Amino acid sequence: MATDCIHPLDHLADGIPLPPAFTYPFHYTPHPLVRLAAKEVQAYLSTRSDWAEELEKGKMFGVLIVETHEGKTGFLAAFSGNLAGSNRHGYFVPPVYDLLQPDGFFRTEEAQITAINRRIGELSQNPEYLRLRKEYEERKAETIRELANARRQLKEEKVRRDRLRTQELDDAEMQSLIRESQFQKAEYKRLERRLKAKEESLKTALDMYEAEIARLKQERKSRSAILQLKLFGQFRMINARGEIKDLCEIFKDTPQGTPPAGAGECALPKLLQFAYLNHLRPLAMGEFWWGNSPKEEIRRHGEFYPSCKGKCEPILRHMLVGLDVEKNPLQENIHKDTPLDMVYEDEWIAIVCKPADMLSVPGKDGLDSVLERLRTRYPDATGPLVVHRLDMATSGLILAAKDKETHRKLQALFETRNIRKRYTAILEGIVEADEGRIELPLCPDPTDRPRQIVSKVHGKPAVTVYKVRKRENGNTWVDFYPLTGRTHQLRVHAAHPLGLDHPIAGDGLYGHQADRMYLHAASLTFIHPVTGKEIHVTREADF
Image 1: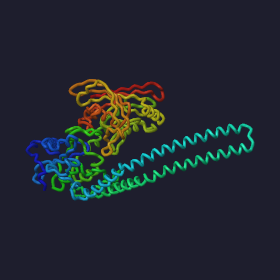
Image 2 (image 1 turned 90 degrees about the vertical axis):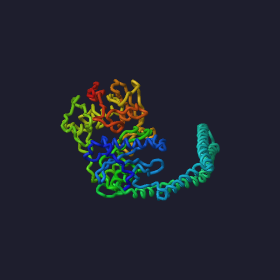
Image 3 (image 1 turned 120 degrees about the horizontal axis):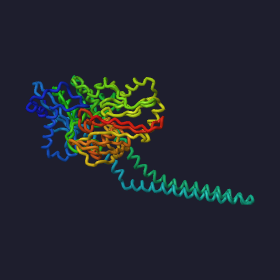
């Protein structure tokens, strides 16, 4: 057993009861022992001045509380990916598979791929290639210009001949005009062939370079794919029952079908693998961010985060088999006896106030939802009923239509931004500006849905106007007026460093977990699609 990876906790954990079940890794509040272990790891990191520059850029770390055969409590620590150019550091558990070992197949093949990349770079910057590409583009442009001029001249000559034909001409003169037209058309064809020949001559020389670049790129792609599959086969993940599956087997039945890059290198899979192989009983886990936040994601220094869905969920679904794991708190049907709060109702529409932690529409876990309640209330209604949705954690007003045509018209109002919405939120910390506008484009995090990221390249426009209501007890009450309706828009705009940099209180994805997320859809204003009257409904938050 690699005992240098097991760090004692008994001297710190007096009086703290052990957790009754293992942490559900995708939605959790860190156990007190996990917080103690994390502080120990953070204290160690502060001693590593040689890592300071890399740690400042930000990295995810994990801790695993374990129990030994002797009944002693300790913890393991791990980092995601590699650190300081290595997968192995004495304080942390080793990787599941060390792809950085100098003589391993990964490094050997990686060197081949690097050589291909270097050759592609050399060819792409070759002076002769760059000259040919420039000349070819210039020749193409010149061909277009010359042919356009020639066609214009042909049209002008045709207009002149047509004008002459309206006059009284003898047969000889008419035949002369015909021959002239035929000659000019033939001249145009000869010019076109000459220009295209010059163009093709350059293209032939250019193609020699581009064919080689394309061949090298295809070889790189093929080698990379083969290397990835071989690499994933080395990650043989074990679970609490001793059952082993490699990453290819684990991801075979997932929507993506193959493991994403970096799968198996996150902190928690490393920790569980080490614990199982060394006959340690996992008790609790936690993963925290250390350092600056990435530009696109929202990560805060020292804060705990759930395990990622894209890379880790399929792996952990296998590795946690055989452990007594906490139930997913989001699967608890806490509102099964909560009456539906009807705020407005007429012949065509209804507006309800959804409680926090209730679904807008049914999910895969069979929990109660606003839509199911409305279907029960309006059995004769047609169409989808619910016009828009709120996040499960958000409370507030939801608009529904009782027939298809009204639903279509209300959706059109949303799409054209003719429904005005106001949300109320409590933000962590003090927002200095009294009001403002946030414009940060958003898109889903491809490896960790439903988390959203800010991306100028892939994101869709997202705009939020805000006004501060009050500042009290170190928090800020704000009203949000979303001008677009992106997923998690208000949550990301509040928490992101380029937004307000103050997360919504209780937002476990982008801030801190609490008893609830303090975001509430407080008002809706729109023109009724049937009566034409303005509807303004308000239900203020109860926090």
